[in-house]
Length: 213
Image (cartoon, rainbow, N blue to C red; front, side, top):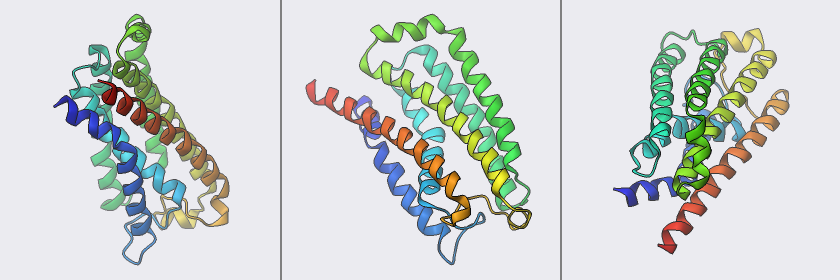
């Protein structure tokens, strides 16, 4: 069980990259879903958020080396996002009434929830410095969730600023490679590089640890 969890975590950057390709191909095809064409940075960001916010925490939650207070953190995170996720999909693809403003509101709530859990367990978080390598990476991942959620708020604010009223009526939710989205794509690329670097370093360190056992 532990070996399977470690292997999946190690392979996670590959999963994100493969799904990014799927999103990019789908949204730029004649059979695209609602949302409009999508750029490569946004494809990676969408893939990252779907896989790393909704699924990766389950692996840490099930892992025996994840400290108890971080398991509580991941439970809170998952409950928050799995309540929002299905509702957002319905609002985007069926009711056609989603706005990034709803996302900003949830993101602010989510950051408050995550910070509250970590601050209430501040001493345990400090003790991670003496914990196992896996526990330390679990702590880093917990912080990355907060960082990327803050980034999501920034993206939503910029998107509302640059999206035209016509694009809003057409239910455009993604930044394409069109020059008008140049700033958003550059900012997104910067965050994607940081997020993917974290996943890659996490994978390399855990893989090296397994090989040394």
